[in-house]
Amino acid sequence: MDPRKLIVITVGIGLMLAGCSGSTSSDFPKPSETPSQSDSADSGEDVSKAPAGVSRTYLEGSSKGPAKNVPKPELPADAKEFTEASASSFVEYYFELLNYAIETNEVAEVKRLSSKECELCDKSIINEAEAAQKSGEWQVGGEHHPKILDSHISGKNVAIVTVEYTADSAKVYSAPGKLQEELDKIDPNRLAFDLEYDEGWRVYKILGAN
Image 1 (cartoon, rainbow, N blue to C red):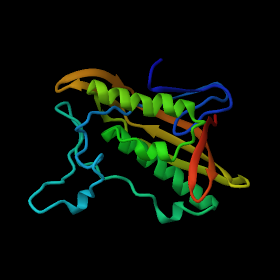
Image 2 (cartoon, one colour):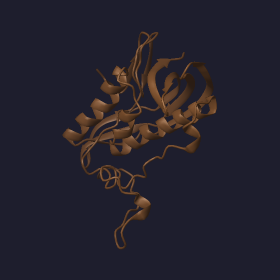
Image 3 (spheres, one colour):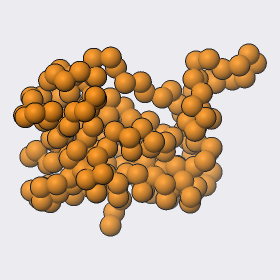
Image 4 (cartoon, one colour):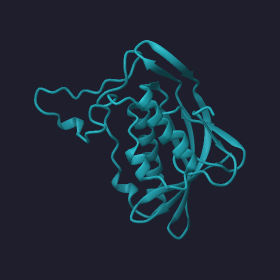
């Protein structure tokens, strides 16, 4: 299975890009990992508070190596309430986490904010990132650009947010100067995020909205 293809086939996509419902396929460049991709990703260090004399300047990834010192997204205050606007803000934050994972392959926060029911997310994002980390791959490019189309409270502690997104082209490297794969850009595609709320939002399913 092409790790970039998250196929929405029958009701039930899980988190970030998981699922099944309908017969729509959506391509998400896989986040790939290497242990050294981000000096601050695993340590939890705030890159804006580096010790004196220690550089924490963001360095984008290239054919020579993965990105370093990537700023970690922070959950906005307006994404913590049980409102339609908050649900929209949360989904935008979720895409920020995806972009962060693409550069750093750090998926701890994605795991925390994803329901266990999200099989595709687990298979196509989390597992792929962990596998890439072991193999030493990293990705350059592939940033996702979401646009919220609709958000509504659909039941008790539940909301649905419809998103249209695009993604930049990307390249995957297995070693300095060794191109393993080129990923095409993603034209506008739609997804519906099923969210559940329990002292905060989590992604329960992701469904094709076309």
